[in-house]
Structure formats: structure tokens, C-alpha cells
Amino acid sequence: MAVNHTVRQARYAVPMQAFRLISGIFAVLLWGLCTFAAAPAYAASVDIAAQTAEPPLVDGRYGSIVVDADSLNIIHARQIDAQRFPASLTKLMTLYLTFDALNDGTLTLDQKLPISRKAQNTPPGKLGVKKGQFITVDDAIQAVTVKSANDVAVVLAEAIGGTEAQFAEMMTARAISLGMVKTQFSNPHGLPNPLQVTTARDMAKLAMAHLNNHSRYYHYFGQKSFRYKGKTYKNTNGLLHWLEGVDGFKTGYTRASGYNLVVSAKRDGRRIIAVVLGGASNKSRNAHMQDLIERSFTSIGVQPMTSVAPVMVSATKRKTVKKPVPSASPMKTASAAMPSAKLASAKIPAAVRLRGRNNQPVTITTKGAPIAAQSAALDNAWSIQVGTFNTKQDALAQLEGVGLMVSNTATPVVMPFKQNGRVFYRARFKNISSGQAQKSCRALSALKTGCAVISPGGR
Image (cartoon, rainbow, N blue to C red; front, top):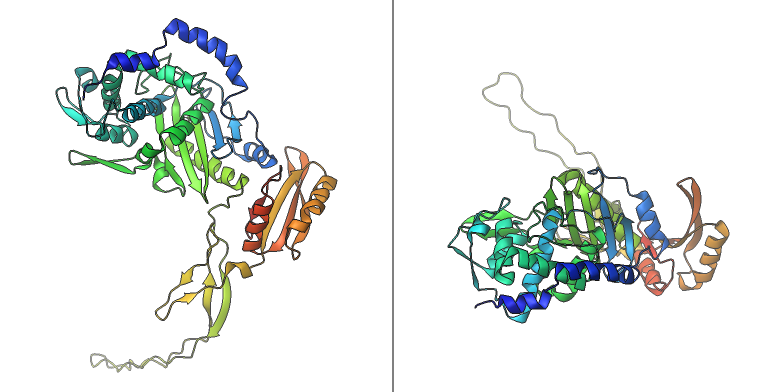
């Protein structure tokens, strides 16, 4: 299928002088009307930014944001509008235009794209495609999402835009249409270019646009490996391989940008989008991203992945058992008879409750019949938090106001804590079951201060 580059370019064409004019006019207009609110919507959000440890950074290149993908509230924000180098996060826009082309029929997944000399000569990381060869659109998408192949990004750019330069203009025009007012693209792969800039907020907008407009292709970002011509490539997003809930998006690195990462994660039906720019190393960036994800899910009421302590449900006595006494070896003249051995009487659990974040009891199997743990609802060690306040009186008033909507077995408590030299007060109901906690928070979901379930031992 031939691609009509003139039609494609007309759709996205924005001359550079018009780009400067448009960005100047709309930057002010869209600043307050951008996709995400400029401040956290609830008290827990403030705690996230204050409690998160400063990560190892590349000086002057850091920026980070976490967004609740359901409400579009910002959970965490640091230097979200400072322009940074996107590195391979650029490929998120290259792929966005690729998915646009698939949707409007100018590309098909099984279509074979030609490899140019320019694509072949693109610097690493690359798949190693050669001039005169072909690669299908499906393989090209996988090469870019999983391997982050710069050479294949050029293949897609030339197929859609005709040339890299024309495709870059299309990328910038698309960014403006998505409200990415501080982003400009100069190439399809993210190799160093001083004119190619973005922000943490803009990258979060692009990730959200993928989820909203191209969800049918989102599975490519969650693909853990890609096999091409007998070789298997592992996804460059390390968190995708082990952090619970992370199911997609992209890494990026150049010496100028530092270590960048966009992640989307989903737990208990709630999704967040997180962006970290300018990490000092792959390891420190991933650790910082993990910390942001865990704290952000907790702030919106999704419990962390730490399991509660094992709980003994009931116990039985182990019977005293005698071991047989072996015969003396004929090779030894000394007596080898072993004294009678008894296993000490001990209590062993009939069932142990081991619960993860989903609060479901685990069935414990032994050599005998499986034993099902009792319901987690019988464990009255859970709590809910219904707000954080500046004064104890405000916290007490909150507890009194919502008390009728909480189990009458719950104990209202005010918990003071210090942060940045100030004392704040948490309003909580303690001594309720997991089921009661979940039910209460659902009933209180409209509270401006939010409602968070606190697992046994949780802070």
C-alpha cells in the first residue's frame, strides 16, 4: 500500500513561523486549561511530594509527575513544566503517529516498509536493518516499543512523512493538538538535538492520549520481549518485568537528558501515569519511580503490595512419633545403635492467613487435604483514614461528621504527626475488618479529603 505523503503532511503541517506564533498565543491560553490540574486535589497528594526522598539526579535535568488517570488529578509534581530533553521518549510520538496512520488506513500491520540508507546508518541503539530490506509495520512497532530501535523509528518516519524533517514537523503539530504546549520535535528517535525538548507534564499528556485514543495498540508497550530474525530482545523498561501493576510505556537515555522513564500502572482497577526525567542512573531512576508508584497508589486508597503478618487461625498438637532404631553396621565393631528419638510436641497451624494487597485469603496446602484460611473479614485490625487536618479540632469534627457511615464497632482516633516542622492530625477509624474498611471507603468516596484503607501495621 502506497502512502500519500502529501495528504499525511497536510494533516499535520505547521510551518515553523506559524509554530512560534501558535505556541506563543496558546501557551498562555492553555496553561490554565491543560489536561491536568496544576495542584494536588487532596491532602494525601501533598504528603506524597513532601515524603518522597530526593532521587540521585542529573543536575538541571530532573522533572517528575504522577497523574491519577481516572480523575486527572496530579498526585505528585516537581518541575513538571521545565523543558528537558526527551531522548527515546520521543518514540512515544513516533508511535502515536504510526497508530494514527493505522487508524486512518494509510498503513496496515502486515504492510512491508522499505529500509533506506539513512535508516541503516542511524546511530545505535538499533535493530540493524539494511538498505534494500523490508520490515512489516507490526515488527517495526515492536522494535521501537521493546528494543527502542532508532533505525526502525526512521523507517516509520519515512513511511509516514516522506522524510525525517517532514515527519518531525508532523510530530510537533500533533503535540500542539494534544495540548503539549512546551514540546518540540526535530527527529523521530530522540538522538541528541538541542531543539528537541519536552516537559514531564507534556509526556504525561502524551501517555494519556495513547490510553484514550489508541488503547487497541497499548499492548505493544507492555510486551516484555520481541523476537526478530531468530534473536530475542528484552524490553528496556525494567519495571515492566517485576513491579506489580506496571503494564506499559517507555524508557529514554542520552548523556544530555539523563535517564528518563514513562510508566503506566494499574492496581485494583485504578490507573496512574508516572514520568521521571533526568535520573542519574538506570538503577536510581527505577528505584525512584517505584517509590513514586507505591506512594501514589497508597494516596488514592490502593493498598501497598506488602503482605500482612501471618495469622495463626487455629492449632493442633503434633503427635509424638518414634523413629525406628537402625541396626548396627557390620563394618563397625563399636555399637552403632541410635537411641530412641522423639520429635518434641509442638503446635502447628491448621491454617495460616497470608494476604496480599487484594485482601484475599490464601488456601494453604499440605501433604494432606488443602486447608482454606478463614475469611479476612474476621480480622478486625484494619483502619480507614478520612482526612489530614491542621488542627485536632478539625480532625475530631471530621470523625464526628462521618461516624454514622462507619461501622459502629470502629474506634475513632486522632493521630498527630510532624512534617517539615509542623504538626498535622490524621482522622482515622480503627479496629474494623477489611470488608468493613472497603465498604466504608466506598460510601465515603465523595469526601473532599478522600478515604484510604489502612492495612494492619500500616502507617
